Amino acid sequence: MAKKSEIKLLGTVASPYVNRVQFVLHLKSIDYEFIDENLANKSELLLASNPVHKKVPVLLHADKPPIPESLIIIEYLDEIYPDVHKLLPTEPLDRAENRFWANYIDTKFFPLYEELRLTPGKEGKEAVKKQIMEGSKLLEETFVKISKGKAYFGGDDLGYLDVVLGCFLAWTEFVENINDFKIFDDIKTPRLAGWRKRMCSHQTVKGVTPGNDTLVNFYMMLQKYRPPRAACLN
Ligand SMILES: N[C@@H](CCC(=O)N[C@@H](CS)C(=O)NCC(=O)O)C(=O)O
Image (tube, rainbow, N blue to C red):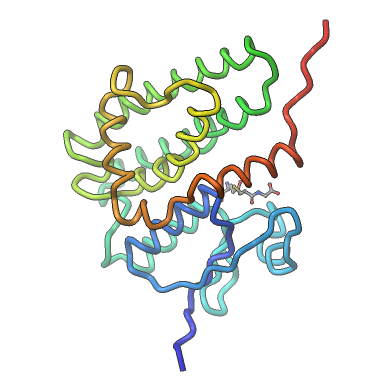
C-alpha cells in the first residue's frame, strides 16, 4: 500500500501564492498531496483551516494545526527541511532584506496587476501601468544588488526571492499580453528580463507554472465575481 503523504497542500493551480509553495516543495523534493480547492465554492476544510482569511494556500502537516499564508508556509518548510535547498540566506541582515522585498512584492507590486484589471478607462489604466513600471525598475535594482552578478536572487540557484517573485511570472505574461505593454523587458529591466528567461526554463518552475487556459479560466472567474469598477460619468 502506498505511504500516505504527511504534507498536504490546499490550493488551486492558478494561484501564484499556491504555486510558490509548490516551487518550494519541488525544490526540497518533499512528497505532498495536492487538494484542489474551488474558490467559487469553498470547502469546509478550507474554511476550517483558514477561518481568518479563507484563502489558499494552506499547508496541512500531519496532525499539526493548519498553516495558512504562503510566505509563512515557505519559511516553515525551510525551517523543518533545512538540509535540502535552503532558501533564506544565513546572515540575519540578508534575511531581513529578503523579507523586506518579499513584503514589497506582495503588498505593493503584485496588487497593481489586480488594480490594473479593476481600473476602468485608458487614462486610469495608463497611470497604473506607470506605477507597475516604477515597481519593476525598483525590483531590477534589487536584483542587481542581491544577486551579486549571479543568475538568481538566491545566487547560482533559486532562493527565497526567486520563489516569491517567480510565482508571478505566468501572470506577468498574461497581464502584459492583455494590456499590450512589457513589465520586464530587455531595455528597461535587462537583468530581470534575463532572470525571467532563466526562471521560465528552470525545471521546477516549468513543472508547476499553470498554462494559459488555466489563467484564462481564473481571470474569467475574477471578472465575474470581482468585476472592474464602473467608469465615472462626470
Ligand atoms: N497573502 C496570501 C494571499 C493568498 C490569496 O490571495 N489567495 C487567493 C487565490 S490567488 C484566494 O484564496 N482567494 C480567495 C478569496 O479571496 O476569497 C498568501 O500569501 O497566501
